[in-house]
Amino acid sequence: MAEELLPPASISSSELKLTALVISHAILNPYVTEWDIDRFADSMRNVTDKTKYFPYPQWGYISDPATFLDVHGRVLVWYLLGIMPPARVECLNEIHVPLKDSLVKCSKAGGQSQRRFGHRHVPEEDGNEKFGHGRLMNSPATFQQAHNVIPHVLWEHFWRLIDPQRLEDKVYESSPLKKQVVRQWLKDISYAEEFWNTIADIVLPDLAQVGRDAISAKADWVITQSPCPIRWPSIYLGMDVIVNQEAPPHLDQASAPSLLNLVVSLGTHDAQFHISELGTIFHYQPGTMIFLAGKLLTYSVPKWEKGERIALAHYMKDPVHNRFGLARPAFTQQKHLLGKFLQT
Image (cartoon, rainbow, N blue to C red; front, side, top):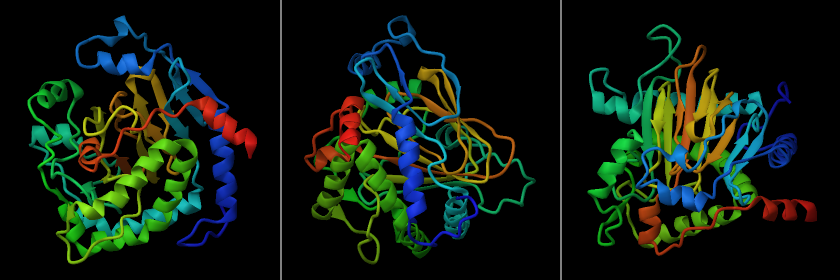
């Protein structure tokens, strides 16, 4: 697979077989917490130390595809290690080179910027980065409130002071989508995003359907700022490109408990992905996908030793879904997925 010549803008049959193997491995390799995730979510607002009521497992280093479940079998994390072969990663890496000058950089002196974006980190010497460094936030439907990466303790205080679901607010395309280089990148990566949508259909079917409903509904609500409407390829309304930045421990406050985020690992790095509440450190090689309940689970990517890191962080916008009149999905249950797999 690693040496196979892959089509540059479509998914090959061998990649489909690899995908099926990785998903099968993950669902047959479950880690089960002692929590009821609904009660865990309810405790977030009022309990400073959740470990008194919800013991955190210490599962340590994970390097095989796996699922992570609550005590009732509801899926909190899909860890799909190596679901894309190296040749596909190389193709996708090249798509990101033109974005280098469009990335929003983190100021070394700006404390607030560092809390939101994380510090710049490239093991190579300055000036040798192929992909640059910074972040690019993209959305076809937003209230123009950023997907803030702020330590979750600060967010708990901040979020009580604002109303993120004011139904009179207008919905816009994010400003980066005006740039031709960003629009071309979106077009070039569409085939991969559509394939990742299909993976979501399999592993998180209710979430995928809500995402598709949101994309369909946006045409009736969004005020287009770009020269012409874009064709948005993802079921997620938020897609950030993060290049050569650490990710500080954070939660996704713009989402909802059952709207799992998706992080796609690209680049050439040897970084690790941490989830605090699970006591896990994931092998995070390029070509890995992780779906996780980012509103509830604190995750981070600290400094790494080699290479450059590209991450595509996908997230759903619960306030925008609310504006569109969409209900939150239930958590996906492992037993329902196993039933479908046994039928096929």
